[in-house]
Length: 342
Image (cartoon, rainbow, N blue to C red; front, side, top):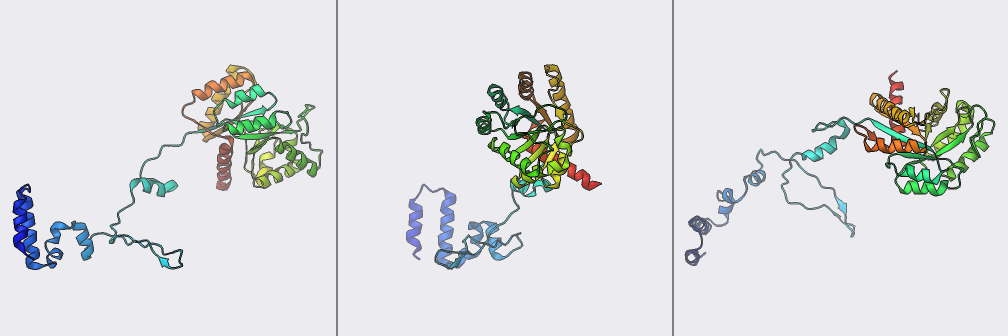
């Protein structure tokens, strides 16, 4: 290599700072004398990052081998994605480690879960205005529709579009002479008729996620009468919420025999239809949720109940309002753990 022209070029470029001029002079002279081997020798340590030099030299710098999967191209030939090597592998970033660890723990402390509360409004469908007032509550409030009102199918679809979880409020035989409504389930019916009436009611509530009983203090005590109900719900993979209109109800135990997620409500909000009584029942629901981690309350679309719930949900702090299916699942899991621990 002719050194003269190169040196003259460097001198002419007076804009280069002295340090740069010295660097280029050394580089030109070194290459002229030693050829390409200079770059692979001591001079390379000035030009190549130390980590890469160490990796190429097989030093003790920590490294992790990466195997890329062999894939088949469109022409049928195997290939593997190409990357520059060696790959300098480091530990996973903190955000990814947090995801990987998941429920097994985390490198960051996790806040304790908030107690969860589910609110269900029963008897929806008979009054369109009341139904829409219930739909104006937060989406996590679940709505349970009676099957026989004319407006029920349209209102149920509207509630689903609004983001609410909805249930079939299935009429069942009570103790005494009260009328549960058309096509209700009675203990005197055969299994086929019980299944037929249940299917009719389900067809009237499009978008349902579960079922709870309307009345039913007598029917829910009869295990044989409950069997065709729970068989059908098992086939449909939906849950059953026992409204617990009687302490003698066998609904939850029969449901679980058929693999149906099931639990009972904890609090009735408006047995007494006054604002003070309803707010007291909401406070009781909060206390149950603190004690157990989750609680379910049932109310009705009375004006005073909806007013109280509107205020309560606006001011709710320290709790998480959840759809009733979430509460049913959590309560089912907790009760199963208690049984297995015995």
